[in-house]
Each structure stands twice: as C-alpha cells, then as structure tokens.
Image (cartoon, rainbow over all chains, first blue to last red; front, top):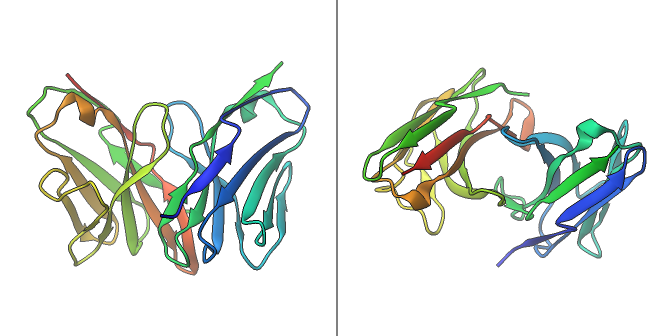
Length: 112
Length: 116
C-alpha cells in the first residue's frame, strides 16, 4: 500500500543552525504535501504545504522542496529558534484524494 | 483557517464505559475527520464524517466501537464505546479547508483519553 517514510526520527541542532527533515512517498499520484508542527499537548498545526505543480515554496524561515521524479520532499528551517522545538509530521495525499498518508514524525530539538 | 474546538480536552475513564467527544468548527465545512494518535506515534485516520451521510471508516475501525454523528456542517461527535486501556490515546478532529481551499486539513487541540 501507499506509505510515507520520514527521516530522521530525532534531530538535534544548535540554535541558529538549519534543520532539514526528509520524506519519501510511494504513490506517484500524490499531488499535495503538507507539513505539520505538533507541540506538546497540542493538535498538529499546518506550517507549510506544496502542490505537485510547484518545486519549492518558502515562508520566512521555512521552505519546502519537492522532487516528483524521486518522490521526495523536504522541510528546511533556517535560523532555528527554541520555539521551533516540536514534532514535525510530513504527509502526502492519497492520489488526488482528500485523505493524507502520514510520516512517522521527527522530534526536533533546538539546543541553546 | 478554521478554528476548531474539542470537548472534553482530557478525561480519565473506567474500562467498559463510553465517552463522547465533541468537535465544533467556527465555519461550515464539508469534510470532517477523526484521528487517533497513540503516545509518541503518528496519526491514524479513524473515519471521515460527511453531513447527511454515514461516516466512512478506515480498515481496523468499526462503527460499533466508534460511532460518529455529523448533524450539521459545523459539528461532529465521536464516541469511544466499551473502552479498554488500549483505547488510551489522543483523539483529534480535523476539517478540510473551507470555501476555495481544498485538501488542507486543520486540526483541533485533541482529546487526551486515559482508560483505567
């Protein structure tokens, strides 16, 4: 079946450095790729998303890149801050369906 | 984006009992979803709730265990029936976008359920 692999499971970076989280999807028909941030005790919050007709999207310190050929997309966070510490989930649409296939999550730790 | 609230925010229940979780949205939405998130894990879709029709359940989830209501375009409930400790999880409601926004899902704060 369809799946999304997410790496790494834990990422520890120094404050001010960049963080990169990578996901690979299996369904070649997937056309929507959101990223969510989940802080402790809260629901997932959408931070950025990208559609298959775009290769890159940026929003301030956050960017997402998509390589459709390789079925690979990545989240880039620059100039990391303590408040970036959270669990990040990637997801891919089930084809063009509204349903999402979720990655396993990455715990991002920002060291002061 | 839609503003979503859930009640209760947390509960501790005895095995064999049932709990109904409410999800309220501040705008009309077509698609509402119920997820389960076990501690330290990713999200698992339980069912999709559309107004005016039966909920669509994912493999491994059945209506008798997780009955869902969707009486209008801003509200849904999920009941966890005949609970056991294995049902201890975070239960999340999400909605799809809104007018002119497809695919994007927005989540409520979750209901943290502990079954003793």
